Every structure is written in structure tokens, then in C-alpha cells.
Image (cartoon, rainbow, N blue to C red; front, side, top):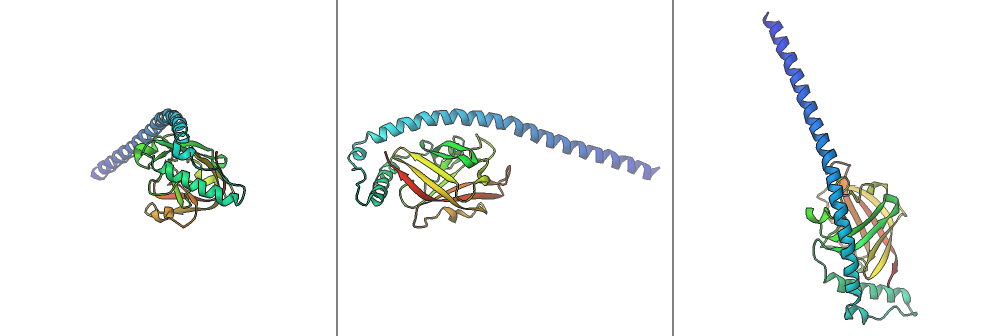
Length: 232
């Protein structure tokens, strides 16, 4: 009689635990399914706002006397002239940046990237779109440029970051020029490996996002070198 009672209790406990597990998983699924559309709507609204903000910032920047007074590229030694002017424009623009504000646009057709980039990588910044690491350079300054983005929430701008391959093009359109980069490498790193955005002494674009999907266990990093500069 007693063994039978224990078996009955064991079955009841098993059913209870299984049911609880199913409920927890269902709750998590519902939460994810519910929150993702909400975060996407929020991010979409923020991106539209950032797009208008970027247009206004571009007009204001180009109207700055310090920018207008810079001479355009000369025919002689044009490449170096373009690089020097891009560097000076980037230096002027860098002084105007404030966290959370739109600073440029990033596009990469391979991964379906086409988003306004904001300054900063805090949670509030990344809810608006891809965020520029404040301690890294801007395009044209000849150093490492770091940009981070979400993969599964808030518009998931870097959802397909792992689809980038060597040779793929990435563009950064800034108020002072358009910079085209070519993917040179991809890597999976630990979240603590902040050295990937350290200065390398040359212009290097680094994109980062959590990896794998729905996990923050690792970071997926894309490295791209500067190919071309187009100034207004």
C-alpha cells in the first residue's frame, strides 16, 4: 500500500513539474512575441525621429563657417587632399556630438542594414538604432570606428550581421561625406574583449552585436577597411 502511494505521489509530482515547465516556457514565448513587436514599433518611431534630426544636423553643420571655409580637394595629390579635408571635417563634427543624437547613416545590403546611427552605446541609445562607441573615432579620422547594434529587439538593425562576408561593402554616410568600407574579417569574441575597438593606427570600421541570436554569451564582430571617401 505504501509503495503504491509513493508511486502515485511521484506521478503527481512529475506531472506538476512538467506542467510548470510548460507554463514557464509558454510565458517566456508570449513575453518575447509580445515585447519584440512593441520594441520594433518603438525603434521605428525613434528611427524616423532620428532621420529628421540627422537631416537638420547635416544642414546646420554644412552651414558652419568653419566648414564652409575649408578648401575643397585640389587636383594635385587629390587622394591625400581628400583624406586631409575629411579628417578636418570629422574633427569639427566630433566636437558637436552628444549621446543619443543622430550622427550618420549606415548601410550594408548584404545584411539588410539601413539605419540612422546615434552617438553612444547605452541601453537608451541602442533602443534608437545602432550606436557609435564614443571612445572610438569618426569616419575620416584615420582610426578605429566602433558601432554596436541589437540583433533581436528594437528594430534588430544587426540581425543578420553574421551574413557579412569578405569583400562586402558597408557605407557610412555622414553630414561631411560618405565613407565606403570593405569587409576584411569576421570574428566571434567574448563580451569582455573590448580590445577589438582599440586604435590600430589606421581607419578600421568594427561592427558588433550579441551572438548567437537571443543570447549575449558572445559578440559577433565585423571588420572593414576604408575603400573610398566621397566629400560634398
